[in-house]
Image (cartoon, rainbow, N blue to C red; front, side, top):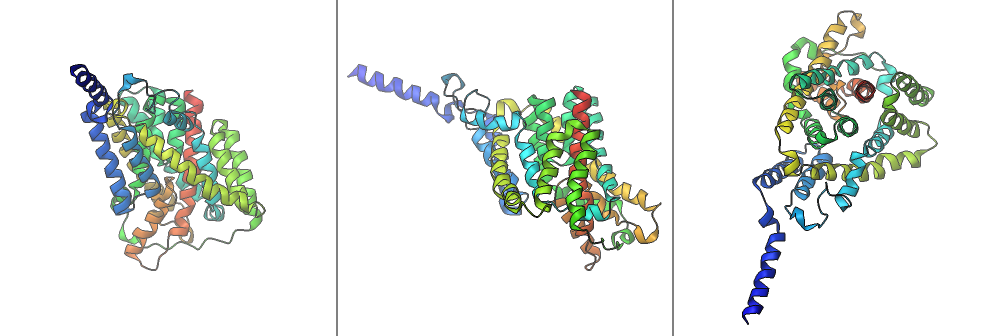
Length: 386
């Protein structure tokens, strides 16, 4: 009888050693709490729910404690585990181009085609990327790590993942979560900066309505856009190629089924897998470091720099533009590539001061230019640093 109870006791002890309770650390509970906060922000305040719910739940999945020595192959960093296999879409960099394919298939570049000078606003907002790059160097990060961190300033999660997978895989989890966090916080971060940097007179400026864009122009744009950008920055081809390919599927008018698949089912599946695995990569033992804290600080600074650069560029640009072609500085914030949220913020803030002044269509120009600009900036960094 004694041997029986000893056997049961040993089995219970072994079972307890496999449970999450026995293997939990304070770090696990911190990350689980952060995941719950992400889910709360998505459900309660609707901050980018398509991103924050998968990432938040991924944080819960990635921080379930288990015995690392048991050889169960559960963790996202354990070779041949299911999560590790799904995570290869992130580490190998093939989720982001598929996301760009879907973005291209759902994006209307008409505002940019009708007013090409808005491309300069999108380009100006990329100063956030290079500003963060220099700050990261000052914090002691290597040039490759600094380049991966800097791309957070573009407010473009897929581009941040793509670049960090090439330049700094060890920092990818923190960079990805930081990029998507600030994308979700666009409605919180940008409006105070926009109000601070503009006058009431500037906020109520009316812009000339965009001209109609022909079908031929829409079809030619992705072809010319691909050739111009990728001849200058061939290293941006994986992202830019898929972006313009998706847009050609949309605008050609003869591949509607492919465009529908790219902008609906395909992008939804990839977004779920990308968000879940990025969230799971925040495993406490790998994520809770001082580097992660610095990355979140630098990400916030880069986002502020990007928003500020876009607004100030419009104000400066207006000094040389004729009166009938001047731009409302409130669209400068849309130069970051958080599509369409930053353009929507231009509209919301503008309507606060003039309920009849609709800026959304104008803001979409620099917004889609920011998508192209962040991918070009990533290609530049990749070309110089690899």
